[in-house]
Length: 415
DNA sequence: TGTCCACTGGAAGGGAGGGCTT
DNA sequence: AAGCCCTCCCTTCCAGTGGACA
Image (tube, rainbow, N blue to C red; front, side):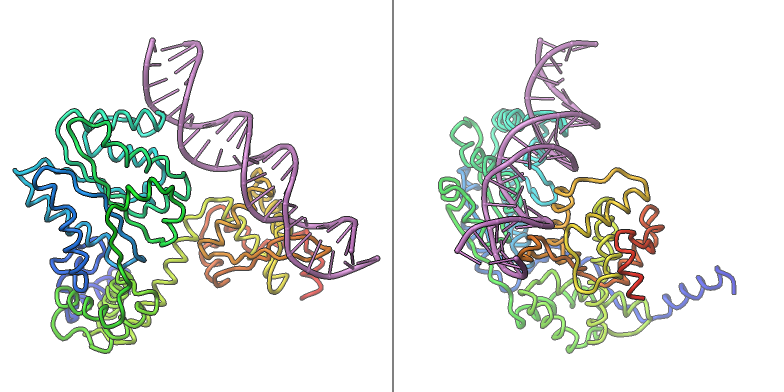
């Protein structure tokens, strides 16, 4: 059978199969539904807080916190969406939503704020102070009620300190025509401790806490969405329960629950199966974890890949763990194979820490007494996964079966 | 009990890449 | 074009450290 024959079969099977999805967009996490079950209280509170804008006065700054997938972003977008509709013709309400983690630096946050006001700034080159001044001028050139939503605000503070927030919380003192309110959203509850007291008190004039959903609540949310996403009778009750239970175990993350449901649906669809059962959910879970790691590994910078590759190769020779020094030696060898000039050990040590945070490696510092103090490092993921990704990598591929010279005698004695 | 290893992690600074003002 | 000033990524330097060993 030729390739086109195979494809014909695929398409035919797809067309013949019972349709699963009515509307799969409903399960994406940027979708904001008309109803947000179990968040009525937060919606009302946020609504009450921003309502003064409708009468042309500034609203209090609000600080929302809770773990990922507890509905902070959804509630914010939902309420602000309604507010903008309501304010039309009444008050010059303007909103800028910034995700600090995606945006990255303080500079880029202001860059985004300027764009929201149609103020032109280059994407690099200016001092932060300069961009801030332009933002302020742009803002005050006409009357604005400006709401700044800083999502994942904790990321910004951890990398850059709170200068930005300090400036922003004080900006109203220098504005004549406009008023600014800030909605801060944080996943990290410890975030408040990192903040200067003045900034904290002005930022959290109001506070809203988002508790994790429990399994029953997640189940309601899933049912709600599933009704819109799937055709009737496609989704087994058991599948919903399992999905809710899995997500509840992982700190009540609704986003994850919805992802599971969507992937499970896609698995069933691809197999041409008429319904989604518990087994699909389980397979979806495995699949998502697998994909997540694959993606993370693929997108690593070259030097980080080499470090992971070094740990992988050492793992063949040594059981358990390796230490920084060994990994650095191996890494240097790999560099000279490519060839590529190696980074310093200090930097590699930093890379190892970064990889530890993402979970690709496990690193913990250990003191070996007379034999110094170092990090014990092992792979955080399956070896087959690494081989799979690196074998298809242009630069790393040829190194995947390399035998580190510095540990040749070890590998020899082992085999 | 003190020594001393093999690092760790903070701090400062360099230079590449970018864009500003004049 | 010259002179500045940013950010980002990296290097260099160095004081600090937990615990096995003498």
